[in-house]
Image (tube, rainbow, N blue to C red; front, side, top):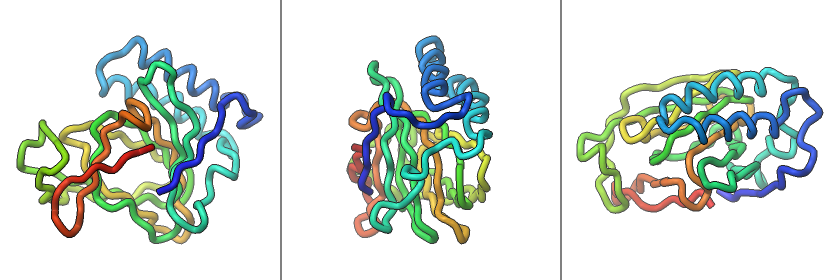
Length: 200
């Protein structure tokens, strides 16, 4: 999916708790908390506060790219500890099965998000390019707007996301690392092997 960038210095919203305030809160948390699970939990109330505002994200970051699924890069931490993107899936489109190797907090802003989570029996603690990705679906979750979910690899790193409703799916992703360093692998449908799936 193509990704568009945006400079945080530009005005994003006139809401009381804007994206800059969310970034500031996340920065404090990631600097002071090294446990990934604790980071996710501590970020949640701040993401909730941001999401509960009317139209927290400008419309241009909630639309597909030429009718296709895409991500809009909103912010990258200068210390390289996290980045924020809005992800847009037109109705019925899917991410395919893929793996995130770093923590993440995801807020559903629009549409119905269908997330299928998978487990992998072979070496779940060491996920690498070229390994088999014969997976077992363990859970399917339908999340309406307002839902917040987590990515907690390695055991909770494999998933597939699909826009299941009649509306375009829009979500905000706060992910560990940067677009260049975030571990992101795709399960190739033909070879059933993991291949690189860069975020940048």
